[in-house]
Length: 388
Ligand code: SF4
Ligand code: SF4
Image 1 (tube, protein in one colour):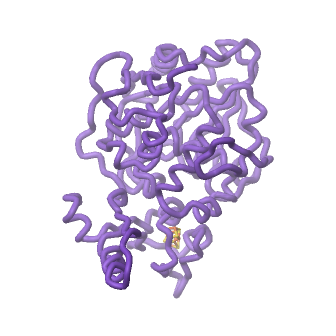
Image 2 (cartoon, rainbow, N blue to C red):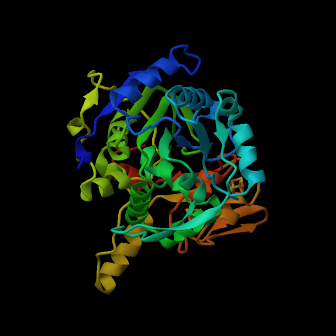
């Protein structure tokens, strides 16, 4: 059996989506990791892109169409009979809603390259033997209609998970309509991370590719700022790929719950330096990459007795990151509609958050269309962890 821990990561420098050599560079990293060994002539290939929301490619929230269309051409050139790009963004999982996301995110390019956009909006119940937390779940059935699945993520900061990349991208196999329910079912960050790993184990993409030509920093995964990173990365292990990507943006396995869970479950090494890097050069650690200020939130659930509980209450309030409405709120109610804990009510056209019901899933931050909902980190927490 293949030793998944030792699957390498390949990286290539690519500064621009208009780079005429982009396709060549992508083919180079794919072949370095033997990423298409499983591709047989005539196979139907699915590409699970990150199409989180109806946003233009320049916003850097979604996988760039130039990279996706280059991949489509490579796959067709290697004998695939059909290449289908799909995702289930946050919100409704209907043809009308998803078509709007396709249009906004520039997916016409995929069709021009000879690929197709997913039009199967069916859902199925999935079961994973040996799952840690999600033995059964609902998933988008289009991934059953392909022979191979390739996972193409965008490297971004993320409110709940610290980072969005290969493993987090696979949450998109859950229909968007059901995602709030999953946040409620797996409310704490560790359990949510284990659920994401269960999904990744179920989807088992043959190859994962990171679009890190331009990533997102700051208020990610949708309202942050584009950040030039200048890399395309690939691996047959989404976990090793995430570990290396995290290192590049200044995070360790301890900072990213999915990496902590993957390490604990023996799916990836603990440190990026233990992953074999192809093309040899040490990868850059981006200076000053801005993260969402949530990842050092602390848990006090172990404190018992009245005094312990009182301490927990005070400490939690003093240290825990939380969603906060900043300037620019347009009163659209999206945060209230998406909140899985029903912790937001609108008063005078502004959202009011019930802190005791909030499960800190940060869906409100992710889906606020104007970036008015942000993750607030308390001054004490910033002081203790020496972060801004
Ligand atoms: S208020 Fe925001 S962070 Fe809290 S539960 Fe609702 S959506 Fe999640
Ligand atoms: S989603 Fe954003 S803009 Fe809309 S009501 Fe909530 S905070 Fe305001």
